[in-house]
Length: 351
Image 1 (tube, one colour):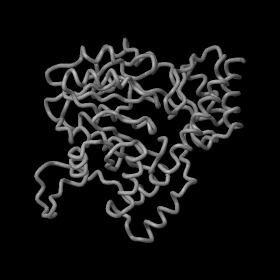
Image 2 (image 1 turned 45 degrees about the horizontal axis):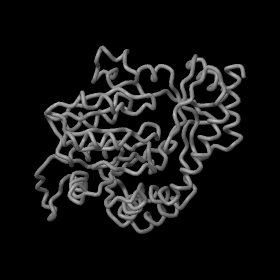
Image 3 (image 1 turned 60 degrees about the horizontal axis):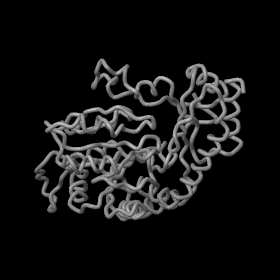
Image 4 (image 1 turned 120 degrees about the vertical axis):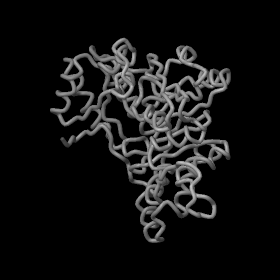
């Protein structure tokens, strides 16, 4: 079904086309060439981080980060219950085991329950900045210090939140704050980790390219054409974030007094405008009838078939999953568009 008011739409009105055209004209269309390095340098500089390593997806970024940190079979990684399943899958791809911690009221990992899940096999914590809300990184970094753990930040939905962990991983999928269509990037201040990330993403070739591969690695490279799009996006990131702040404020004001809705805590950066709604499925059908797309919240990891645990119904993450949804949230929304969406929500609840 096509919606007049989709949940997400990329904003490609900067230099993206010019950069892609230049890349094609120069013939540098694969994972080699200057555009990859330009994007990596621009995004790392924006975040005041020493090294950026671009790759093929946010999931690939997480997998590379865990592998670069030496995490593998027999190890455990602390992962939130409330996240997109790719966070947990990245751990599974390495042969390690994800260990889940329920969420707090802001949907982020509940830091008060992390330590009780740490065992002798725990090697890392993976906080996820859900929907653009920054986790309590001071508490997480302190726990990691006390237990000698590494920290991999899943920042797929949080471009603009400055990373502090060992490696931060971003998605550049088409619905993210900035995009390359498909793609991802890892950020780290550690030059050895950066080198390992680069090595692993490119099939662990030796320097002489002898086709003798000493470890299992990946073809997780980003193409120069994707990097061209991403570079054009990074150049406008401040503008994009400001537009999204305006969208958040307009929704906050327009929906503040609607009975049946619960507004969620403020976001450090706005990825999606999330709410909790009574009669959610009826609301979604009503909005769809007016060409307004909505999406559901993540389901708990312990409800996923590959990680199933019978206690999932008791999780706070499940409570939010049962009535949560998000509304159209992209920089192409005009004030009139938002007023229409707000008006339809208010009409459904009779206000």
